Image 1 (cartoon, helix red, strand yellow):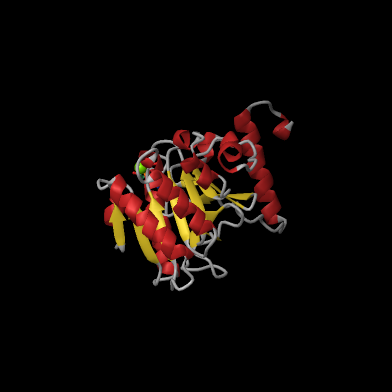
Image 2: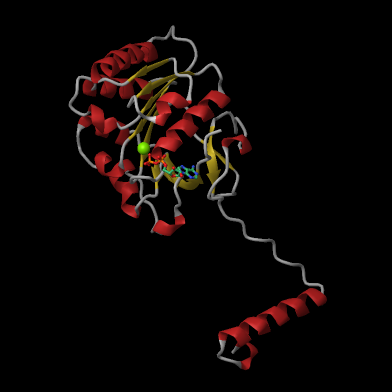
Length: 255
Ligand SMILES: Nc1ncnc2c1ncn2[C@@H]1O[C@H](COP(=O)(O)OP(=O)(O)O)[C@@H](O)[C@H]1O
Ligand SMILES: [Mg+2]
């Protein structure tokens, strides 16, 4: 028994003495154990990493973590998990990575995302969204299109069974076959539905699950996750899944 006593305070004092004795004896101190920051700004991240934009800081090495700027990215999370903020951060990351990227927003007029960036075009009503999605799907599949197109869709479920439903499915398909990107966000519960609109993004098997439950990996992106503790995930922290792998990532607050 440490210090010969069952009392925690005595054991703690004995441990401290042991530490001091080891230092006096010249034992090399162990390096400190770092942890993910709960809050930081995008200015602290590099613009690129290995030729990709940077999503945030990961638990692998507490360093920047990249994401592929093509195909589809699903963003999920419970209310107040940081989904809206992450859409702004992702769009800003794309802007810093490649200032020539043409950014488009489909979502809600009232959302802070609409006002946070200089979008080439925004669409909020279903008819507008349908028209924009059709035009962008065509541009993505046209070999003469120069530069990268990136589309951010907020509250995807709002467009379910609207006139934009089919065109957004086609847009996601076009992105998967090209070097362009579609990021689509909805609450975790909304992603659970089996409509083709949701399915097209889930099948991409790439996404950011904020404040996830372990089963969300399997249900949404067919990727098994280990047991996760809810309290490991403050707002803006989640699991990023791609190619069957995952990492815990803390996203920055937008700059
Ligand atoms: N990356 C982040 N780092 C720190 N706090 C964040 C981050 N993202 C979101 N938050 C906090 O969580 C709150 C909810 O974020 P929000 O993006 O509106 O969530 P949601 O869209 O999921 O409801 C924000 O007001 C902010 O305080
Ligand atoms: Mg939101």
